[in-house]
Length: 215
Image 1 (cartoon, rainbow, N blue to C red):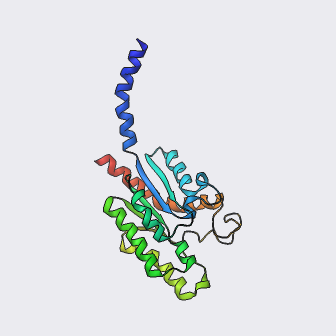
Image 2 (cartoon, rainbow, N blue to C red; image 1 turned 90 degrees about the vertical axis):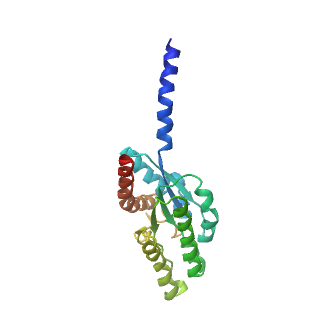
Image 3 (cartoon, rainbow, N blue to C red; image 1 turned 90 degrees about the horizontal axis):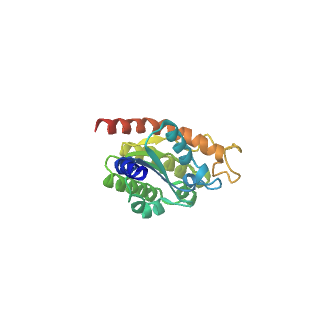
C-alpha cells in the first residue's frame, strides 16, 4: 500500500519538479580566464559567488560559467553558438582583455564583441546584456590604451546594455586581491568582482522575476 501511495505522489509531483527545472533562468557568464577562475578554480570564481547570492534569496536562476582561459574575442565568437544551445536570460560579456594584451586591431576586437552580442540577441531577444569594461597597460601607447577603453561604453550604449565600468579597477596593486602575476584575481578579488557584478545584476533579476509572475 505504501508503495502505491508513493507512486501516486511521485506521479503528481514529477511534472511540477520538471516544470521547476525547465523554468530556471540561465545567466551565462561568457569570458576569459577571469571568468574561468584561473588560479583559484571555477568554484572560487565570481560567477560561483553570484550563485551563492542567488541561492540565499531562493531565486530560480542558474549562473553558468562560460569562461575559457586565454580566450580572445575571436575565440569567443567561434564558440558562442555552442554556448547558446540552451536558453539565456542574462548574458554577461567579459572578453577583450587578451586582445588588448596582444595588441590586436581595435576595430577587429569591437567587431567580434558586437557579433557575439548580435548572436545572443538574435537567438534570445529577451536576454539582458551586461558588459564588463576592460583596460590595458599603457605600454602599447596612449592612443591604443584610450581607444581600447572606449570600446566597452560604446558597445553598451549602442546595444542598450548595462555596463560595469572597468571591471578590475579596485584590484590592481593589491596583493590580497590579485595573484602574483598581477593579472588574475585571488579568491578575495573574485568576491569583490561578485559584489560589483551583483549591484548591476540584482535589479535585472528582480525585473525578470516580475516578468515571470505577470505572464
